[in-house]
Amino acid sequence: MEADNSRTEEYLESIYKLQEEQHPVSTSRLAEHLKLQAPSVSEMVKKLAGKGLVFHSEKGVCLTDEGKSLAKKVIRRHRLSERLLTDVLGFKWDEVHDEACRLEHAISPEMEDRIAESLGNPKTCPHGHPIPDRDGKLIKEKVKPLSELKAREKGIIVNVFEEDPKMLKYLASLGLMPDVCVKVEEVAPFGGPLIVCVAGSRYALGREVASKIKVK
Amino acid sequence: MEADNSRTEEYLESIYKLQEEQHPVSTSRLAEHLKLQAPSVSEMVKKLAGKGLVFHSEKGVCLTDEGKSLAKKVIRRHRLSERLLTDVLGFKWDEVHDEACRLEHAISPEMEDRIAESLGNPKTCPHGHPIPDRDGKLIKEKVKPLSELKAREKGIIVNVFEEDPKMLKYLASLGLMPDVCVKVEEVAPFGGPLIVCVAGSRYALGREVASKIKVK
DNA sequence: TCATAAAATTAGGCATGCCTAATACAATAT
DNA sequence: ATATTGTATTAGGCATGCCTAATTTTATGA
Image 1: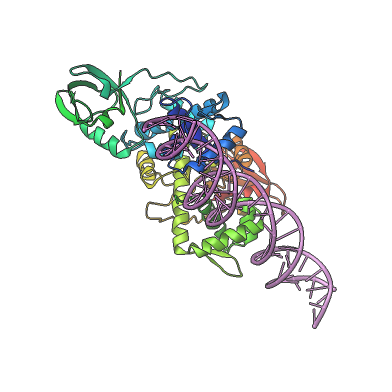
Image 2: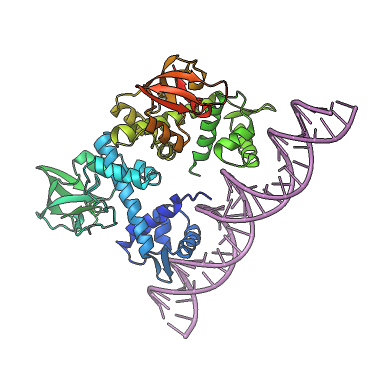
């Protein structure tokens, strides 16, 4: 009965990420994130609860310690894969997310160790997110979205939500990537474009886009 | 309906390999190789035939052109993965088969290209098997098993069947690996051990093991 | 408080790919 | 020609994980 854990891993990873925006994660939000229908998620969540990987209350879903630990392992594999793709195979930082989503389920603990070692134990993925260490320790990101910067305020982009490939491509084309210093020039009342100054040039970013970039 | 082709790929790969020893491949042999029960294979083969990937006659199963082409793509991904594992990540040649079995289903055509490019378009996997090129061209291995060498005949080991990890480990411990020059010292009448001389040392190999090592 | 809307679950299906047990088919030896 | 042996398939199930439609539960606002 060779277990195929990839669906389980996918769920736990999603829950882990969504917990940062909404503590007990609602099944509908989870369904949306996984691009599945709500009843499928309801059902699967029940199974995950049965395996002791999540708690399931009326308020929503939370990871148990075991679930959290597994989620962080998957995130580690994901982010290490991304680094392998950029650092060794020459992919651009905006091209690696989907590829890593497949690799993360096919990597053994040994391979995970070897990647980390070969790349000099990198601390972050190419989008700036921290890589959990072998024991699951994960530095908390204390940052705020770009859209919250005031006019003329400055900051360093530390990471970018990598889920939407089109957005990544757009940001990459603007030169907006982790470690770039930005300065907000003007702030539109709301909804309107946010003007961002990167290394002397001016770019307009919608608020929705700007909220997906975090600044230190 | 996001297709998961990994089972299909696994079947085609097995059929491709088994065709070298038995032209129309019997379902029982296929079942044995895939470590499945015969009826499961019967059923799946019917589906593969329905998709135009195999022919299924009374004599057994053959790949169609399309099936062959897909099989070679999978084999390319497998062997490139193995090279990545040894050349970049520092695995030993006897450790990479199982890992590659998982990776081969998670690698996109782009990643395949990048691996090939980054490694300088390697011609063989670490076990000495040729890597099909992008267009599916695959050099035929015209070699014979070590067990067919006469006494005192010499040869170069070009490849080793990599399916059995324990055997690989044993061979690696003897220094028997691709590109090593061997000389057969003695041949027992039949069934008995074959004495092989490698780099000055003498080893006795069972005929069954020797038949899994091919010599040029 | 009660109506309505939104969120979650239950019910009932379906495809995939595996299993065991039973049966059919083929090949060989008597 | 027929019994035996081995190979292959059919029949009937099962687990996983997804779906739609219907229903229940929970929250919200008048």
